[in-house]
Image (cartoon, rainbow, N blue to C red):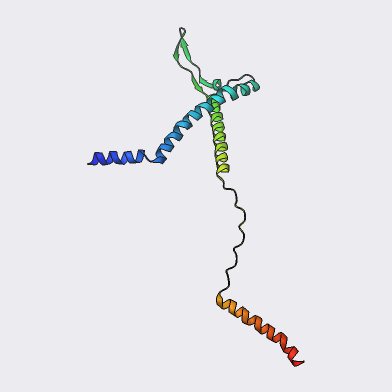
Length: 153
């Protein structure tokens, strides 16, 4: 009973729309990351390297301990701090982050609802029968007062 419930729970979890959407996002994100890495490494960095004196950033490193070579064979590899590779990955990240920012900004602009035209103020409610009757009485009293000076004369 425990195994079938576990498998049913896992199937229900895996088939939820959010999980599938997330998986698709991760796969597309991985492919997008490869494209951006290629753009950075193959298109952006060569001109930058040329501008700074023909330097390939991935080749930049600080040799902390040189390789040990005996009889023409390398006995111990060099110990290096590969800061050029770090710079390359940092440029990749900045470009990916900027691209994602532009994409999210575009989506938010497209999804914004345009402000609705200001609605006309609602019409006042119709007067009740009592209000109509009182208004009629008021008007009659006004007419009557207006005639009184004529009677006195």
